[in-house]
Image (cartoon, rainbow, N blue to C red; front, side, top):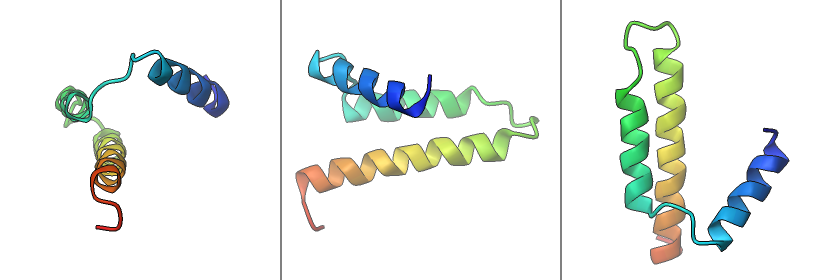
Length: 69
């Protein structure tokens, strides 16, 4: 999937109520991090990317609840 397809599919899923709650999304990201192999040479990079995704989610959620905070 390219970026445009990901965005279009995500928007469609959200409009149809198929998105996760923020809490469920954090749980899912935590599960993905937990499934990573610490011995892998890609571990640090993949965990960092997942944490950055979680940080983005946190920022979006925070801005939705308390804009400008």
